[in-house]
Image (cartoon, rainbow, N blue to C red; front, side, top):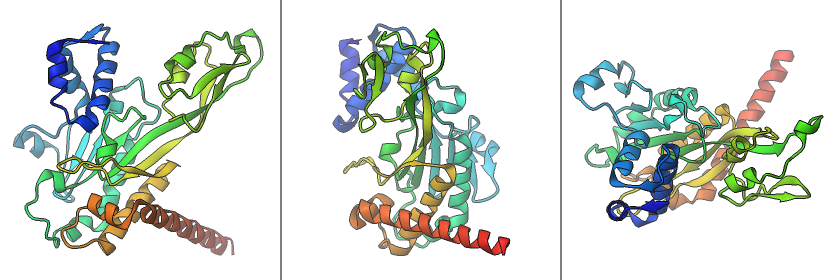
Length: 311
């Protein structure tokens, strides 16, 4: 897509590591509005449409105050904020056409997990200096791999995914016409037509569902849907993308993984150490192992309780 020089100049103010992602998001927004080029006004419109912010004034915040933990929540339920943690969500609740999962209810569950974990009380004892926004623990939820809520640059990110299969039926309407729209829609090069049928490379597929929406005959359907979890992301002077610790989990598993991460951080972090620094110090494999062990113990406990009740 063509970019005006003034728009290119504005884009150059974005940090280099995030510039390609920002360019992609702006072009997607421009295309959805039928624009053939990107101008500064298109960038400003995309910024308003894609960036989620907290209540803009103290009166707005007062209207959305929560008695437990002085929690604040914006009217569109896009952000939950307390003194020591934030939760943000993409625009899925406004009817985003790209959504494959709707994490709105999950966000409420994760907020309750943070409340119940004792994290806020724990943070009151830590020597992290002034309580400024970027030091708060941030949970970011996205309803699809387009990741408008930027889960890769926050402490705990949740990304909705839906992996597809070819749906076979009866009659001529179930026959692939080899139009190639599914292949053209896939930005990951995970699809190709072989023998007149779409062939999916699941090692490259990210579960975005673009191919499902592209097929007029609805021959591709989401079969395995859920959420992936990434942890340890941050911006600032030493930016770092979050790393994956769970590929596809249920809401119960996502809630459990957050609880395990918080428990591990509160037990093993050093005084003054932010969560992203903690993940970097102990290593992502150690975090994965903690989650896997915690999940296994939870399953064993559930089995024992079931056996006892059947007793």
